[in-house]
Figure 1: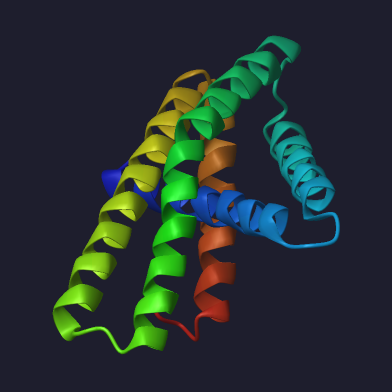
Figure 2 (figure 1 turned 135 degrees about the horizontal axis):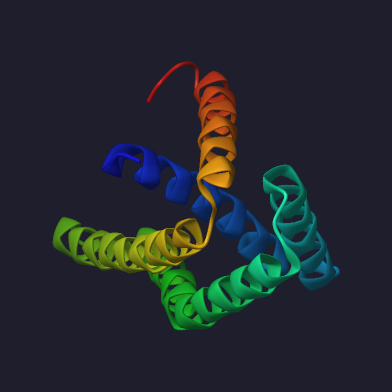
Amino acid sequence: MSARKRFLIAGAALLAITASAAAAQSPGGGQRFAGQARERLRTFIADYLDLTAEQKEQANVIFERARGQAEPVRAQLQSGREALRDAVKSGAPDAEFHRLAQAQGEAIGRMSAIYARSFAEFYRILTPGQKEKAEKLHARLGQRLSKRSGGRP
C-alpha cells in the first residue's frame, strides 16, 4: 500500500476518532455516545474485514494504546482551542495568533502520527485478503469524504 493510501486511511480513521472525542466533550452524555460510536465503528470494520477473534483482540490492544497515547495531546488541543478563543476576545496581536496556531498544528501532527502508527501496526496483522478488503473500504471512504468536501482532496 502506498504511503498516500496509508495516510488517507489514517486520516479517515483520525476523523472518526476525533469526532468521537469531540462528542465525548459535549455536554449531556457525550461520553456514552462516543463510546457507542467507537464500538460501532470497530464492529463494522471487524465484520467487513472478517477479523478473527485473535485479530480483534490485537486491534483492541493497538487502538486502546493509541487512545491512551493521544489523550494528553487531545487535552493540549482543547486548551489550545480555548487559548485561541481567548486571544480573539482579548484582541491579541497577530504574533500571538501565529504562536497559538503553530502550537495547534504541532499537536495535530503528533495526533496524526499516533494514529498513523497504530493503523500501520493494525495493517500488519491483516491477511492479504483482508488488506485487499481494507483498500476497497478505504476507496469507498475516500469517495464519500470527497463528495462531502465538494470534490476537494
